[in-house]
Image 1 (cartoon, rainbow, N blue to C red):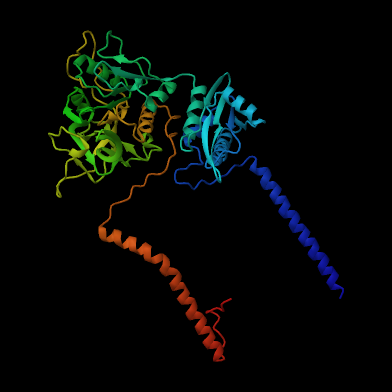
Image 2: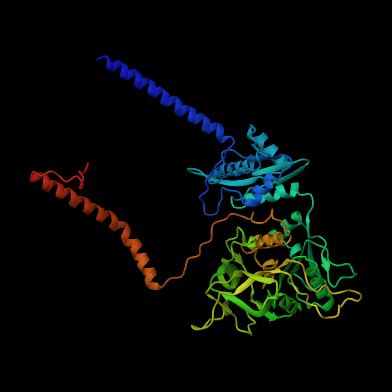
Length: 539
């Protein structure tokens, strides 16, 4: 009998020790969590994680960045989740920066005072519709933030969506902390696309990161060569003379990376017509290792465009698939230029052919059409939606190379020739550098819609060429694009009816199985036998 109280006392001591040890472990875990911050992001687009570029920028901060967030309280769904997402992302910045990025949510009462402070900070008021039980209400609210670094500030008046938030934050931090801008030399004088004066987002973003305000008129007026971190030739429509080609070639020979967005078919938007054109860049690029062709690529995997039609005096807009704007999803995703990109719309693009590369030069195809793409006939002039060519069953099809990058040491186009500029000497070979080439410039055309992925592609390309690794890969984190693969009609019908029949049949089959097991159990019980343990006794 004496053992009973003693055993209970020992059990109580052991239990108390276990509870104390568990509490100590919990305390240590909470203390360590202040230094160790671990999260597991299983979203396909990595929506709750920062890119390597954002983390690198956050770690390189010399002084603190303060972020003040202005979110109205009691926002209607789905905007109630925005504040939580913003806090999660800002927590990632704070951790990556080791505390140099700080943030606070401005909470001021009453609501009128909060609205006044938000507007003074540069926030834009938004109108929200809220459906009640018996009425529709219109409310005003704010969703924005302001960043402060030293004596600079940057405002994000409206947080429009989750997928753009990291780009907006990192780009603004980079603008405030950057001491010197990379210089991008953009050529003019040959009918190049006037994209810098357009309203496309790329034209609004790039001047904040790069010095592109001083265009380079070719041919050069003086003997001074092009000086820049990268060179961009976008959409020329007139032929380059030898002096202009000389300026471009010798810039590359001095190691300046270049981007060429070249059309061999001129697009007439008002008539939906194309006509051949030659810019003189064909032979230049062929010397470097790529041949520009003149045949447009059209693809069954394509973008949707809005077409306005007049019917009976009424104008209406319909959305149609337009095969002359391939939706490119087949590309080298591991290359820095394509980092973070899911698809790119490539309007009126021609095929690139990799010629025998010069010694020391390597060509990497980056963007390819789908295997359901074809080359338009050689004499194609109309590209109207109702004039799409119909491929024959045995006609050759894609994928075709639409863009790529040349890397290595390039021979000069003027090697072995006299210099077209008097008194100049030809540099026969370049140091190691890069050339990015696309078979279209129409993705910058202000008369066309801004297709998905275009801004990200060109921003990454310029960042790659100018060796600006902060801006590579911080583009939007939108939905992962997974186009449906075409299947045979028989397979499609099997999947369709399988889904229709499988849902009701599964519970019926499970019910029959349970009924048979219960019936066997009752029969065994009635016969006086023990039910086998493996069968189980239903509850």
